[in-house]
Image 1 (cartoon, rainbow, N blue to C red):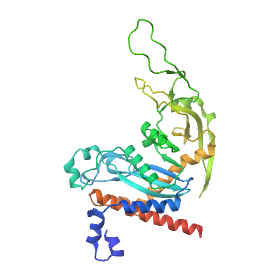
Image 2 (cartoon, one colour):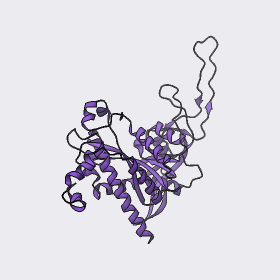
Image 3 (cartoon, helix red, strand yellow):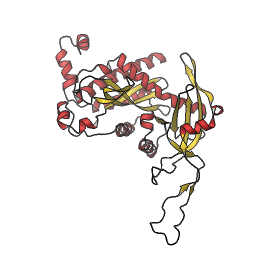
Image 4 (cartoon, rainbow, N blue to C red):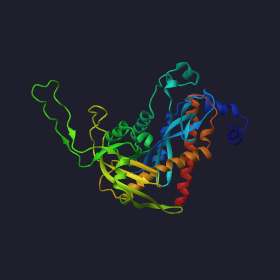
Length: 355
């Protein structure tokens, strides 16, 4: 606060601190303006809406939402705050359009603790998946234009998340676990047989897949190295960007649970494996149509990383992780101010590039 006050309001440190950290003004009108400006700057059918987390390590237990949880900034479980972020990006220009605090159940179940941190009374526990889906719906209702939704495995592993995106009629590409189960694309469901005469029990309801399921890691192990090819997707500042990848059409085992955690196949999707090194592989699902080229598919998958660039710049250049208040409103005010500043800088960058 003090460096900002010295620059724009000398001697008004206390008022600036009150405006950001203590007052309870509504962020919604400014969030609407941010969406409008971001849509003008980077919205379009060739833009991506990227879902991710960003976290802030914290000591103590009084700052709103702080708890032992996975901290991406440290790469391990630690005491931190975690926010769900939504980034609108086109090309190499990302704009963060939403930052929402994830409030763990250890907080929402303790109303006295919430009251001390000025958490609004109507705030209840929501998973990160629920927060992300609510923000996607809000952004769509605001008229923001984007071509698809991208997310890492923290969101992509959720059957509910993928199903909700599909139900919204959205294209998506998400990271998944190596243990994700899939069926071959040409799997068929054999109708259930009738019970033998004289046996008891309700009629058999579900059919049986005529081909076995397997994990995505096992599938690519079976396909072997010959299935992988080097695919380039665009020119970067240091030359052509490329990746070793393999892609096949499959049907995820995401359908009806017919017992014993055995799920039926759902609609056909792309399954992609990115071979980063001799030991590291990353896996993705995408509901893009089967005629999409591998180059385009690689470009879609890799577009997600622009949000990490945005998070890094928000923290290093604009102090997103430097907030020292403890309240719900204060944290969201601070985050919104950082988002607006970042969007303005991106506007300057795009304008200068066009000049």
